[in-house]
Length: 216
Image (spheres, rainbow, N blue to C red):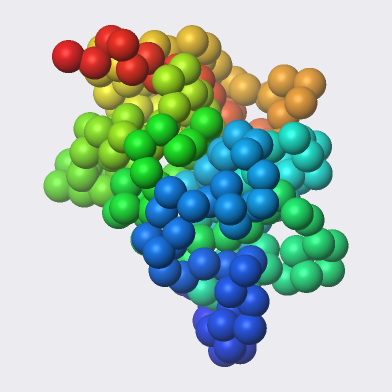
């Protein structure tokens, strides 16, 4: 699907540097100061238009949430939601997540969400998948011990690949999987999830837990 450019996105984003961070490495180790509290910080990688991260912020005022999105024409929709209904515990990072370990210091993050990530189905694209070992190694740096990674996807190939990667890494324990996830009582659907459920497509879910003491 072709990305529709939003001409005013860069300008609006530049006017709200406390809501959308374009140089997150400058805040590395200081996100608690950004939120002005020491509550747990959870991150969604590839947050799209921000529906999930904003709803999570509303439901869990005792936590802080950061949505990472590469494209300004997409993250702008999340910014607009925050401007319309301000929240103290939600912000965005507008940058490619490839260098996510440069955004946070070790053990700064309490949880990660990978919602409907690009599956990059071709074999030569494997290193781009957000559950490739290269990414898992970066997550292990920034996650606190016993932190969770929760993944949802409509792509079985990506789900199967991700499950294999987590099972192959001693630092992760796959706590729960579902081949047709309709969500727990507290599930927060993304924009994509709502569309896929409406189409009758199964949603695949994986919950992995990071155990630092199992690192070799």
